[in-house]
Image (cartoon, rainbow, N blue to C red; front, side, top):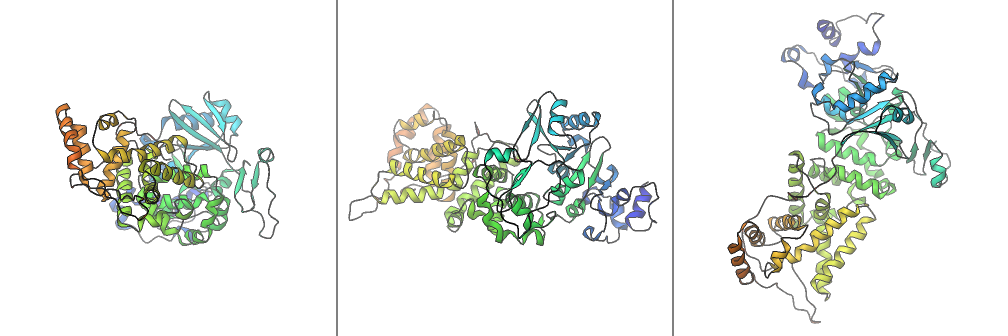
Length: 527
């Protein structure tokens, strides 16, 4: 069998026998596993292979890749995902693990979650599993729950022809009208409802990238590849299925997904996939703010947040999400602050430690809060009211772009509000601060400010000693706190108004390496 596969790979074997499916005969040519699974002997004998994109075959028929080629490790697969596919198959349905989970398995990575695709309707899926519920309006799916794990199960979706270029734009539909439709688009081409069931090859074509359009059957341990996804994985290439411009109009969030996958997987974006992004970036403004926030959260908690942010700027996609990012990153302190925050966040995610989304967005928006805070103080407002006014304005402005969840925005405001109190370091208020619910997050945020050069490092060093010290050491620090700290410098104005430069008058010291709360920083994981 192995010799036969090798002969087929190098084109040394005649056409497959009549009883061999054509797609399976192509498995070695277009569906070879990534290089990590190839033996050194095979590499030494391998001749240059033709690019998979040039292979002419029926797109409705998949390449069937056997286990000895793809090499997926069964131990990396969730037992509950297998239970779902087995349950559906035993009921007479087709069912496969699909999407990002298959991609990660082929890369030798344990997926964080698993999706299943099937020809069963949502109602049929729900009847087969005790803890299953149908969710979603735009894309109706079923959540099958096993303890804390949820297996997201979707029905194969049909291909629906996009509106003609010269067609009149559809009228705006009311919510009840939308709910009665299985498919609907808005004037820009964005899909509002997509619940038309179809065949597996249609479902594969409806998926976004070639590397996400492969299906794995745990029962036969085979991978079905409709769009040369394996070849693109070997080439480390991110390619859109179909016409990229049309796919971006259907769902502008795909532009953010391009950035996230390219940064996370360290893949290159294929030229035709990348070309329309700059011109179509404004379509991001058509996406509901809540959905944008969820996608940004996945991006920031991917373990590659810094690389994602750089890619966002590179593709011009950040203007509709974090419009002030350019201003922040053009300033040395602002750039260092965000770089430190995202680098440490990435390290925590990769180490499996919890990260607070509230803390993360507090760092991204801090520069704007600080700038407005200084402006209000310069206009004569007292520091505390000026800070709270700045927080309100930044929060309200950002909410128009990203619908930051209330619990996260509350964390952000508390972290920002603690900064002025943490800078003082004197009096019994320091002891009270230790009992504050968000003290650790505020302290970690302060350390970032010190490390970036915004504040003198002695401020962070004082708090580190205060936290770690016993009662006597804390009393000594409280006694010396006011003497060691120079008064905040104020700029004289003819009107008598006061101005503030954060960090003036602090002495040098040490810094800590944390940016997220070791106690209580929780947030959703990235799929």
